[in-house]
Amino acid sequence: MTIPKVIKKQRCTNFKTTRIPQGQSEILSASHEELFLTEFISLTEVDP
Image: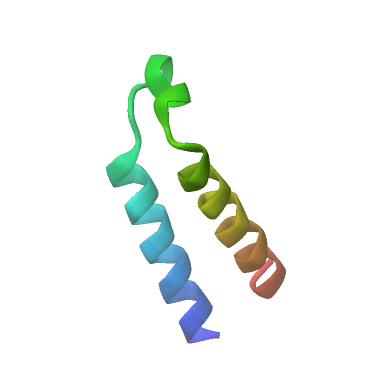
């Protein structure tokens, strides 16, 4: 249970750090969004 929470926290921090203003959110690379969504889904399944 501890490991998923750590990864979740790390993922949120990284996303907030690399996030851009809403007007430019589309500039985010597709690979970055795909990775973020994949991690978010897997973490949601592990720790709902």
